[in-house]
Length: 342
Ligand code: PLP
Ligand code: COI
Image (cartoon, rainbow, N blue to C red; front, side):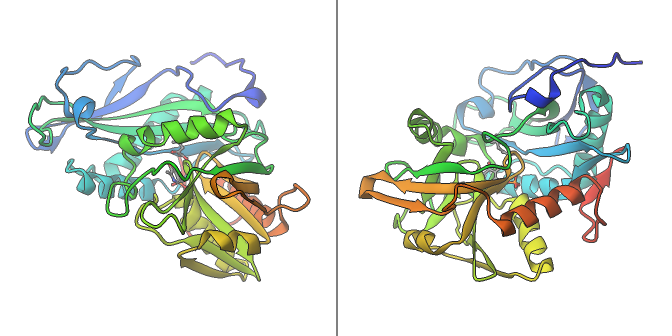
Protein backbone atom coordinates (compact mmCIF):
# COMPACT_ATOMS: atom_id res chain seq x y z
CA UNK A 1 0.00 0.00 0.00
CA UNK A 2 1.38 3.42 -0.95
CA UNK A 3 2.36 5.76 1.85
CA UNK A 4 0.07 8.71 2.70
CA UNK A 5 1.54 11.91 1.40
CA UNK A 6 2.20 14.85 3.62
CA UNK A 7 2.25 17.77 1.18
CA UNK A 8 1.35 21.41 1.67
CA UNK A 9 -1.54 20.95 -0.78
CA UNK A 10 -3.06 24.38 -0.29
CA UNK A 11 0.13 26.15 -1.33
CA UNK A 12 1.08 24.11 -4.38
CA UNK A 13 2.30 26.09 -7.37
CA UNK A 14 1.54 25.23 -10.99
CA UNK A 15 4.78 23.31 -11.36
CA UNK A 16 6.32 19.86 -11.76
CA UNK A 17 6.69 17.47 -8.88
CA UNK A 18 7.79 13.86 -9.39
CA UNK A 19 5.09 11.24 -8.85
CA UNK A 20 5.22 7.44 -8.72
CA UNK A 21 4.51 6.36 -12.30
CA UNK A 22 3.89 7.44 -15.87
CA UNK A 23 2.33 5.39 -18.65
CA UNK A 24 3.75 4.95 -22.14
CA UNK A 25 2.79 3.53 -25.47
CA UNK A 26 5.06 3.19 -28.52
CA UNK A 27 4.09 3.43 -32.17
CA UNK A 28 6.34 1.14 -34.23
CA UNK A 29 5.95 -0.69 -37.54
CA UNK A 30 2.76 1.21 -38.23
CA UNK A 31 0.91 0.31 -35.03
CA UNK A 32 0.43 1.24 -31.41
CA UNK A 33 1.83 -1.24 -28.87
CA UNK A 34 0.74 -2.27 -25.39
CA UNK A 35 0.42 0.21 -22.53
CA UNK A 36 3.55 0.22 -20.38
CA UNK A 37 4.06 1.55 -16.86
CA UNK A 38 7.28 3.33 -15.97
CA UNK A 39 8.66 4.74 -12.75
CA UNK A 40 11.38 6.72 -14.52
CA UNK A 41 10.80 10.37 -15.33
CA UNK A 42 13.35 10.43 -18.11
CA UNK A 43 13.26 9.14 -21.68
CA UNK A 44 16.04 7.87 -23.87
CA UNK A 45 15.85 8.72 -27.54
CA UNK A 46 17.74 9.22 -30.77
CA UNK A 47 19.55 12.53 -31.05
CA UNK A 48 18.04 13.01 -34.52
CA UNK A 49 14.47 12.42 -33.30
CA UNK A 50 11.98 14.61 -35.18
CA UNK A 51 10.55 16.05 -31.96
CA UNK A 52 13.93 17.56 -31.17
CA UNK A 53 14.66 19.05 -34.58
CA UNK A 54 11.42 19.69 -36.37
CA UNK A 55 8.99 20.17 -33.50
CA UNK A 56 7.05 17.01 -34.17
CA UNK A 57 5.47 16.94 -30.74
CA UNK A 58 2.06 17.56 -29.25
CA UNK A 59 0.74 17.72 -25.73
CA UNK A 60 -2.54 17.90 -23.91
CA UNK A 61 -3.68 18.98 -20.46
CA UNK A 62 -6.56 17.87 -18.25
CA UNK A 63 -7.19 17.47 -14.55
CA UNK A 64 -8.30 14.83 -12.05
CA UNK A 65 -10.38 15.89 -9.06
CA UNK A 66 -10.78 14.21 -5.68
CA UNK A 67 -14.42 14.75 -4.88
CA UNK A 68 -16.55 15.11 -1.76
CA UNK A 69 -18.26 11.78 -2.47
CA UNK A 70 -14.91 9.97 -2.43
CA UNK A 71 -14.72 9.47 -6.20
CA UNK A 72 -11.91 10.71 -8.43
CA UNK A 73 -13.18 12.30 -11.62
CA UNK A 74 -11.60 13.55 -14.85
CA UNK A 75 -13.23 16.11 -17.11
CA UNK A 76 -14.00 15.39 -20.78
CA UNK A 77 -10.94 13.23 -21.57
CA UNK A 78 -12.52 12.21 -24.91
CA UNK A 79 -12.29 15.86 -25.97
CA UNK A 80 -8.56 15.92 -25.24
CA UNK A 81 -8.20 12.69 -27.21
CA UNK A 82 -10.06 14.25 -30.15
CA UNK A 83 -7.98 17.43 -30.03
CA UNK A 84 -4.78 15.37 -29.92
CA UNK A 85 -6.02 13.48 -33.00
CA UNK A 86 -6.63 16.79 -34.73
CA UNK A 87 -3.09 17.92 -33.81
CA UNK A 88 -1.77 14.61 -35.16
CA UNK A 89 -3.44 15.27 -38.51
CA UNK A 90 -1.99 18.78 -38.38
CA UNK A 91 1.64 17.73 -38.00
CA UNK A 92 1.52 14.28 -39.59
CA UNK A 93 1.70 12.03 -36.56
CA UNK A 94 -0.26 8.78 -36.15
CA UNK A 95 -3.56 9.26 -34.32
CA UNK A 96 -3.95 7.57 -30.95
CA UNK A 97 -7.41 6.00 -30.58
CA UNK A 98 -9.71 7.69 -28.04
CA UNK A 99 -10.24 4.46 -26.06
CA UNK A 100 -6.51 4.01 -25.57
CA UNK A 101 -6.10 7.65 -24.56
CA UNK A 102 -8.89 7.44 -21.95
CA UNK A 103 -7.68 4.08 -20.64
CA UNK A 104 -4.19 5.52 -20.15
CA UNK A 105 -5.55 8.63 -18.41
CA UNK A 106 -7.49 6.49 -15.95
CA UNK A 107 -4.54 4.18 -15.40
CA UNK A 108 -2.00 6.90 -14.69
CA UNK A 109 -4.36 8.68 -12.28
CA UNK A 110 -5.05 5.46 -10.38
CA UNK A 111 -1.37 4.53 -10.24
CA UNK A 112 -0.65 7.92 -8.69
CA UNK A 113 -3.74 8.08 -6.54
CA UNK A 114 -1.84 9.32 -3.49
CA UNK A 115 -0.92 12.46 -5.47
CA UNK A 116 -4.52 13.44 -6.17
CA UNK A 117 -4.92 16.44 -3.85
CA UNK A 118 -7.54 16.32 -1.09
CA UNK A 119 -11.02 17.70 -1.69
CA UNK A 120 -11.21 21.44 -1.07
CA UNK A 121 -7.44 21.92 -0.94
CA UNK A 122 -7.69 24.12 -4.02
CA UNK A 123 -5.22 21.82 -5.78
CA UNK A 124 -5.83 19.21 -8.48
CA UNK A 125 -3.87 16.51 -10.27
CA UNK A 126 -2.75 17.86 -13.64
CA UNK A 127 -2.58 15.19 -16.31
CA UNK A 128 -0.13 15.85 -19.14
CA UNK A 129 -0.26 13.62 -22.23
CA UNK A 130 2.68 14.03 -24.61
CA UNK A 131 3.24 12.62 -28.08
CA UNK A 132 6.65 12.84 -29.75
CA UNK A 133 8.31 11.72 -32.96
CA UNK A 134 11.24 9.60 -31.78
CA UNK A 135 12.88 8.16 -34.88
CA UNK A 136 15.71 9.83 -36.74
CA UNK A 137 15.27 12.17 -39.71
CA UNK A 138 17.69 14.72 -41.05
CA UNK A 139 15.56 15.86 -43.97
CA UNK A 140 12.32 17.57 -42.97
CA UNK A 141 9.97 14.58 -42.86
CA UNK A 142 7.74 12.99 -40.25
CA UNK A 143 9.15 10.24 -38.02
CA UNK A 144 8.21 6.59 -38.45
CA UNK A 145 8.26 5.91 -34.68
CA UNK A 146 6.48 7.73 -31.87
CA UNK A 147 6.18 7.67 -28.12
CA UNK A 148 3.04 8.65 -26.26
CA UNK A 149 3.49 9.31 -22.54
CA UNK A 150 1.15 10.53 -19.85
CA UNK A 151 2.56 11.89 -16.63
CA UNK A 152 0.75 13.58 -13.77
CA UNK A 153 1.71 16.18 -11.22
CA UNK A 154 -0.29 17.87 -8.46
CA UNK A 155 -0.82 21.59 -9.12
CA UNK A 156 -2.21 24.74 -7.57
CA UNK A 157 -3.75 27.69 -9.45
CA UNK A 158 -2.21 28.79 -12.76
CA UNK A 159 -2.92 32.46 -12.22
CA UNK A 160 -2.39 34.32 -8.95
CA UNK A 161 -5.23 34.12 -6.46
CA UNK A 162 -7.28 31.46 -8.28
CA UNK A 163 -10.71 33.01 -8.86
CA UNK A 164 -9.56 36.64 -8.58
CA UNK A 165 -9.05 39.35 -11.21
CA UNK A 166 -5.76 39.62 -13.05
CA UNK A 167 -4.41 42.12 -15.56
CA UNK A 168 -3.16 41.38 -19.06
CA UNK A 169 -1.11 43.24 -21.64
CA UNK A 170 -1.54 43.17 -25.41
CA UNK A 171 1.67 41.98 -27.06
CA UNK A 172 1.55 43.86 -30.38
CA UNK A 173 5.19 43.11 -31.11
CA UNK A 174 4.65 39.36 -31.00
CA UNK A 175 2.59 36.80 -32.84
CA UNK A 176 1.89 33.47 -31.20
CA UNK A 177 0.64 31.83 -34.35
CA UNK A 178 -0.29 32.62 -37.93
CA UNK A 179 -3.83 32.55 -39.37
CA UNK A 180 -3.08 29.44 -41.42
CA UNK A 181 -0.40 28.11 -39.07
CA UNK A 182 -0.39 25.74 -36.10
CA UNK A 183 -2.27 27.88 -33.55
CA UNK A 184 -5.25 25.52 -33.61
CA UNK A 185 -3.01 22.61 -32.64
CA UNK A 186 -1.46 22.00 -29.25
CA UNK A 187 2.15 21.81 -30.43
CA UNK A 188 5.21 22.94 -28.52
CA UNK A 189 6.25 25.42 -31.22
CA UNK A 190 3.34 27.71 -30.36
CA UNK A 191 4.56 27.90 -26.79
CA UNK A 192 8.16 28.55 -27.87
CA UNK A 193 6.75 31.41 -29.95
CA UNK A 194 5.05 32.79 -26.84
CA UNK A 195 8.01 32.73 -24.43
CA UNK A 196 9.34 36.22 -25.22
CA UNK A 197 5.94 37.89 -24.98
CA UNK A 198 5.15 35.95 -21.82
CA UNK A 199 8.38 37.14 -20.17
CA UNK A 200 7.78 40.68 -21.37
CA UNK A 201 4.33 40.63 -19.76
CA UNK A 202 5.53 39.08 -16.50
CA UNK A 203 8.46 41.50 -16.22
CA UNK A 204 5.93 44.35 -16.18
CA UNK A 205 3.82 42.70 -13.50
CA UNK A 206 1.02 41.38 -15.74
CA UNK A 207 -0.48 37.92 -15.25
CA UNK A 208 0.01 37.08 -18.89
CA UNK A 209 0.37 38.34 -22.45
CA UNK A 210 -2.70 38.91 -24.61
CA UNK A 211 -2.69 38.31 -28.36
CA UNK A 212 -4.43 40.04 -31.24
CA UNK A 213 -4.81 38.28 -34.58
CA UNK A 214 -1.45 38.19 -36.37
CA UNK A 215 -2.66 39.41 -39.77
CA UNK A 216 -4.55 42.60 -38.99
CA UNK A 217 -3.70 43.18 -35.32
CA UNK A 218 -7.31 44.14 -34.97
CA UNK A 219 -9.20 41.24 -33.41
CA UNK A 220 -8.81 39.45 -30.10
CA UNK A 221 -7.16 36.04 -30.27
CA UNK A 222 -6.34 34.63 -26.83
CA UNK A 223 -4.70 35.24 -23.46
CA UNK A 224 -1.44 33.30 -23.30
CA UNK A 225 -2.43 29.69 -22.66
CA UNK A 226 -6.13 30.42 -22.21
CA UNK A 227 -9.09 31.46 -24.39
CA UNK A 228 -10.90 34.78 -23.94
CA UNK A 229 -14.57 35.39 -23.25
CA UNK A 230 -16.48 38.60 -22.60
CA UNK A 231 -19.93 39.10 -21.11
CA UNK A 232 -22.39 41.86 -21.97
CA UNK A 233 -26.16 42.22 -22.38
CA UNK A 234 -26.71 38.68 -21.14
CA UNK A 235 -24.42 37.38 -23.91
CA UNK A 236 -21.27 35.24 -23.76
CA UNK A 237 -18.93 36.39 -26.53
CA UNK A 238 -15.80 34.49 -27.52
CA UNK A 239 -13.44 34.84 -30.51
CA UNK A 240 -13.82 32.92 -33.72
CA UNK A 241 -10.27 32.67 -35.04
CA UNK A 242 -8.14 30.26 -37.04
CA UNK A 243 -5.11 30.90 -34.86
CA UNK A 244 -6.32 30.01 -31.36
CA UNK A 245 -6.50 26.68 -29.57
CA UNK A 246 -10.03 25.26 -29.44
CA UNK A 247 -10.35 25.23 -25.64
CA UNK A 248 -12.36 22.45 -24.03
CA UNK A 249 -13.08 24.71 -21.07
CA UNK A 250 -14.42 27.39 -23.41
CA UNK A 251 -16.54 24.86 -25.28
CA UNK A 252 -17.98 23.73 -21.93
CA UNK A 253 -18.59 27.31 -20.78
CA UNK A 254 -20.45 28.10 -24.02
CA UNK A 255 -22.79 25.23 -23.21
CA UNK A 256 -23.17 26.25 -19.57
CA UNK A 257 -23.81 29.86 -20.57
CA UNK A 258 -26.57 28.64 -22.85
CA UNK A 259 -27.95 26.45 -20.04
CA UNK A 260 -28.00 29.54 -17.81
CA UNK A 261 -30.07 31.42 -20.39
CA UNK A 262 -27.30 33.54 -21.93
CA UNK A 263 -26.93 34.07 -25.64
CA UNK A 264 -23.66 32.73 -27.02
CA UNK A 265 -21.76 34.48 -29.82
CA UNK A 266 -18.61 33.10 -31.40
CA UNK A 267 -17.29 35.74 -33.74
CA UNK A 268 -14.45 38.15 -34.38
CA UNK A 269 -14.08 40.61 -31.52
CA UNK A 270 -12.45 43.93 -32.47
CA UNK A 271 -10.09 45.22 -29.77
CA UNK A 272 -12.21 48.37 -29.16
CA UNK A 273 -15.11 46.18 -28.17
CA UNK A 274 -13.22 45.44 -24.94
CA UNK A 275 -14.58 48.78 -23.72
CA UNK A 276 -18.10 47.43 -23.84
CA UNK A 277 -17.78 44.24 -21.81
CA UNK A 278 -19.32 44.11 -18.36
CA UNK A 279 -17.11 41.16 -17.46
CA UNK A 280 -14.36 39.13 -19.13
CA UNK A 281 -12.28 36.10 -18.34
CA UNK A 282 -9.44 33.85 -19.45
CA UNK A 283 -10.45 30.21 -19.51
CA UNK A 284 -8.60 26.93 -19.80
CA UNK A 285 -7.79 23.74 -17.94
CA UNK A 286 -4.94 25.31 -16.02
CA UNK A 287 -6.64 28.71 -15.63
CA UNK A 288 -10.21 27.36 -15.08
CA UNK A 289 -11.79 30.84 -15.22
CA UNK A 290 -9.45 33.66 -14.39
CA UNK A 291 -11.51 36.86 -14.33
CA UNK A 292 -9.92 39.77 -16.17
CA UNK A 293 -9.47 43.06 -14.33
CA UNK A 294 -7.83 45.16 -17.02
CA UNK A 295 -6.26 44.74 -20.44
CA UNK A 296 -3.61 47.28 -21.40
CA UNK A 297 -2.38 48.12 -24.88
CA UNK A 298 0.73 50.21 -24.11
CA UNK A 299 1.81 50.57 -27.74
CA UNK A 300 -1.27 52.60 -28.55
CA UNK A 301 -1.66 54.03 -25.04
CA UNK A 302 -5.01 52.35 -24.26
CA UNK A 303 -6.25 50.73 -21.07
CA UNK A 304 -9.45 48.74 -20.97
CA UNK A 305 -10.67 48.47 -17.39
CA UNK A 306 -13.24 45.70 -17.37
CA UNK A 307 -13.75 44.89 -13.67
CA UNK A 308 -14.49 48.43 -12.52
CA UNK A 309 -14.43 47.45 -8.82
CA UNK A 310 -11.52 45.03 -9.25
CA UNK A 311 -13.76 42.06 -8.45
CA UNK A 312 -14.96 39.13 -10.57
CA UNK A 313 -18.40 39.72 -12.08
CA UNK A 314 -21.56 37.78 -11.19
CA UNK A 315 -21.92 35.91 -14.50
CA UNK A 316 -18.30 34.74 -14.45
CA UNK A 317 -18.77 33.61 -10.88
CA UNK A 318 -21.93 31.70 -11.77
CA UNK A 319 -20.18 29.99 -14.69
CA UNK A 320 -17.16 29.18 -12.55
CA UNK A 321 -19.24 27.66 -9.77
CA UNK A 322 -21.31 25.65 -12.22
CA UNK A 323 -18.24 24.32 -14.01
CA UNK A 324 -16.43 23.21 -10.87
CA UNK A 325 -19.62 21.76 -9.38
CA UNK A 326 -19.84 19.48 -12.43
CA UNK A 327 -16.13 18.66 -12.32
CA UNK A 328 -16.44 17.68 -8.65
CA UNK A 329 -19.64 15.71 -9.17
CA UNK A 330 -21.73 18.06 -7.05
CA UNK A 331 -24.23 18.86 -9.78
CA UNK A 332 -25.83 16.44 -12.21
CA UNK A 333 -23.57 15.73 -15.16
CA UNK A 334 -26.31 16.41 -17.69
CA UNK A 335 -23.94 16.65 -20.65
CA UNK A 336 -22.02 13.49 -19.81
CA UNK A 337 -18.73 15.29 -19.39
CA UNK A 338 -17.27 13.49 -16.43
CA UNK A 339 -15.42 10.17 -16.25
CA UNK A 340 -15.23 8.49 -12.87
CA UNK A 341 -11.78 6.98 -12.46
CA UNK A 342 -12.51 5.45 -9.08
N1 PLP B 1 -5.28 28.25 -25.38
C1 PLP B 1 -4.05 27.75 -25.25
C2 PLP B 1 -2.98 28.33 -26.10
C3 PLP B 1 -3.78 26.72 -24.34
O1 PLP B 1 -2.56 26.23 -24.19
C4 PLP B 1 -4.84 26.21 -23.57
C5 PLP B 1 -4.62 25.12 -22.63
O2 PLP B 1 -4.84 23.99 -22.93
C6 PLP B 1 -6.13 26.76 -23.74
C7 PLP B 1 -6.30 27.77 -24.65
C8 PLP B 1 -7.29 26.23 -22.97
O3 PLP B 1 -7.70 24.99 -23.47
P1 PLP B 1 -8.41 23.92 -22.55
O4 PLP B 1 -9.61 24.57 -22.00
O5 PLP B 1 -8.74 22.81 -23.45
O6 PLP B 1 -7.44 23.56 -21.51
C1 COI C 1 -3.66 23.97 -19.94
O1 COI C 1 -4.54 24.76 -19.60
O2 COI C 1 -3.74 22.75 -19.81
C2 COI C 1 -2.47 24.45 -20.58
O3 COI C 1 -2.09 23.93 -21.57
C3 COI C 1 -1.68 25.48 -19.97
C4 COI C 1 -0.26 25.06 -20.04
C5 COI C 1 0.40 25.44 -21.32
C6 COI C 1 0.51 25.41 -18.83
